[in-house]
Image (cartoon, rainbow, N blue to C red; front, top):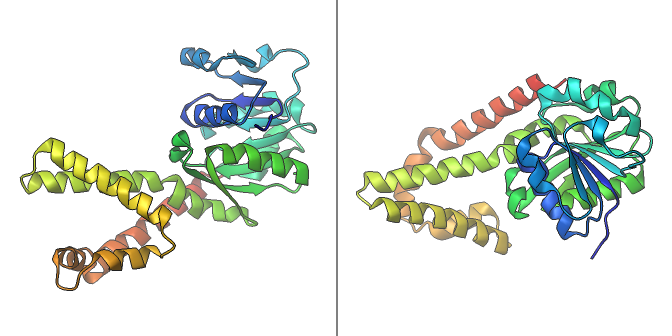
Amino acid sequence: MTTLPSILLVGGGRMGSAMLAGWREQGLEQAVIVDPSPGAATLAGPGITVVAAPAQIPPGFAPAAVILAVKPQMAGQALPEYARFAGQAVFISIMAGKTIAAISQLLGQAAIVRAMPNTPAAVRQGITVAYPSSHVSAKQRELADTLLAATGDVAWIEDENQLDPVTAISGGGPAYVFLLTELLEQAGLDQGLAPELARKLARQTVIGSAALLAASDEEAAQLRINVTSPGGTTAEALKLLRADDALPKIFREAIAAATERSRALSG
């Protein structure tokens, strides 16, 4: 098992706690979590201390990485408290929309990795896309990659602007899949299926299809074709879904809208 260096986690919410669970599995021995919420106390454990404010961080604690997992709107108030770690730690921000430039204004000249994870991180099946600032060393990037990989796959990009469509696709992607599951369940109810059966069919179909996609070397389009017998029931349904480019068009527009919203929130 790999032993991880000391980590400072700012924010112990869903994503922060999911990452912490992954680090524990990787051999995390020492961490401090800053989170004022009462429920954060449950994250404490051997070598892991939870404090309510940065002023309570134990004296002499020197983290190799500071994970910024607070809400973006709290950045202006919260981040300056951690500028003292600039120069020794790599800062990994998972704050949606907050650019390297905006974070640097609050921390000073710091090594910053901006990352966009998604919620399947909670079951170690996430995907995180990361972008490093020019101050990040090769060793710090390697550490960031190790920490982010604790919750799933990691991809690195060379253009920070790509994080906007990344946010729209993978950051919001689970919501689109959950919406599809909802719609399948409701369609089953509309056709007279019992609620328990409609729910089970919808959920397991999505789960099983994702597992098949993960296990297959074929493209998603080919897997779709494999299911679609000419003139059959699936072909009839797809004819309606693709009529007048309806579903493809709405998806393109939805991702474009989410991307623009990500850009608008930057700063």
